[in-house]
Length: 525
Image (cartoon, rainbow, N blue to C red; front, side, top):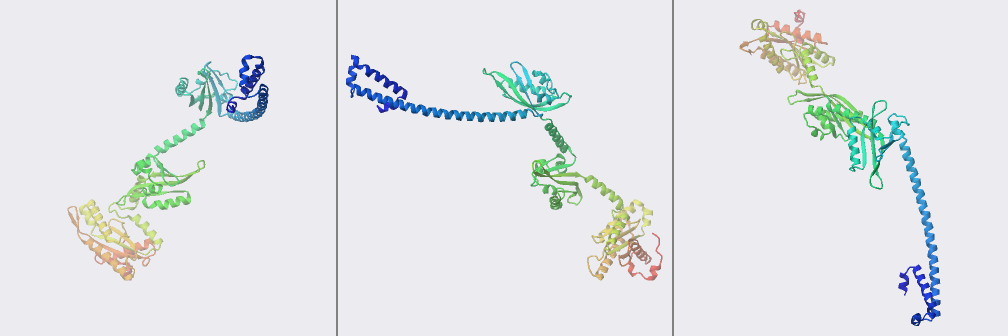
């Protein structure tokens, strides 16, 4: 019985009790209900009282439940109202934000009623195109007519995809004509809305003026094109000196594929321009933020392979807060070779390959100004004029070239040899040469002079001719014998003249000349 009572709803149970009470009240007057009365364990009056008590109890319980439900309903209603207010505040905030956004001169709104083929454009949309706000625009043609001819097909294709149901969102960047005739870059972004029947009802879209962004993109693209096609080699490295980008010119001048250059570091790239300069250059770059100078790469023979004017700079980007390094390399190899050729013309004797008079004088002036002791040899060939007169200048030039090589071979490595006249040679080197004591230096000088004199007295084989000449050598020292270039050359010339007077094929030192010999007038040369 208790299980049955718990299973039945309170209202059903109350109605059931009322029904039983009605039956029991009618039982004495209805013979058909007499067996039911006899079946009850209670008397009729007792059963009625029990049911009345149960009925009162259930009614009391129902009343309490109703009050409880009413309280819960009130609380839920208050909670719902609070949520509604919160949603309204949120909606108002979003609506204000949306209105503020729509009032921007950079953002416009347009809407297309697909079913009725009507369009609506916001004041900002019209203002973006330089149109008065009261301009009458009400169909899609007003939008399409202003699209740049080269962009119309792309815009139409996107609209068709949306209308066919292939895409639900509409997004397109294109150009539109301003009222004054120029074109703006705009970005349209929107979506379609359906009615209750599932048909397309309208397209709503916002429009953003992206002209400045497109201008920046065009500038960056132009910069990238200029860098790519620049004749100067350009590379960019990150903060860790890792190469992240290079142009075609740098790849060509180094003879290295780009993907291999991208595996290099900035110091490694600099070593390919001049091996020993990288560490010093990076140190200066870190200290001063930039470096500019010339780098030279030599081949195995010591000849110039690549000459570069290089600028390396540290770059800091304020927006990204990132540091990069740029390298700009200009190939000046041809310029350096041309300069060397011009220097050779100005400073090198074309017949012998030795220094000429100009180079000799410049070098002597520099050494004397720095007060470095030197030994100078003035050499004049004996019997050279008949060679030119009888065999010709071509043979004479070849002989001079061979003589110059002999002189160069017999001098110390740090000596400078020059041809200063038709058959005159001058050479000088620091004093003392190798040994540090005066006697040893003198002995070494005498050995050099003897070797040159002996080698030049030997026959030379020039083409089919055997030619024999000789030499006379005068020697002077700075600062012992002279205090400037002119007097030093004059002292050596005087000593050489005395060597010729003594029978040619000899050498004399200026310091060993007697007063009588010094009084003799040296012939003008």
